[in-house]
Image (cartoon, rainbow, N blue to C red; front, side, top):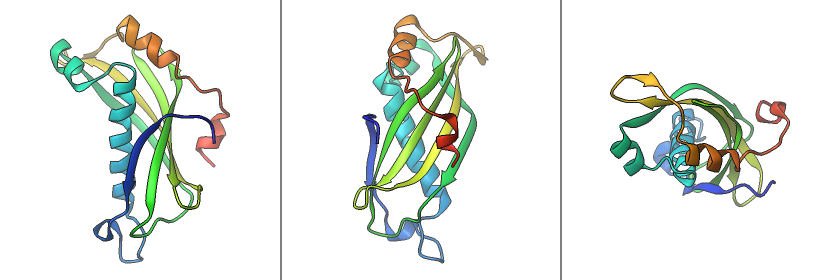
Length: 147
């Protein structure tokens, strides 16, 4: 495991499980979404910044790989890193872990665009946000998110 920042901690609740007793895919997406907002805040895309500057983020692609099943009571954490940042676009990943076993149970790779919410168009990241996100780039093999 790389020394990635933890962006989510939680537990699998019984109501998050499907008829087979596994956490349903909708909850993986939800937990990855919560991790995304924590991660964005780490490099300056906080709720107050987005509101005050009239900015937003839009997900344009999300690929999730399910590796292991989670069941009610499992304790999970998510670690995150930047793969690439360009003027208006960021590509990042999450790794979800079963904290008891240490296994990666799911990965997500996402692409998001920085928006001007008034114009409803993409716009450049502010310099400080760009630099802080760039500092979180993790060198990794791209296929590791997809295996």
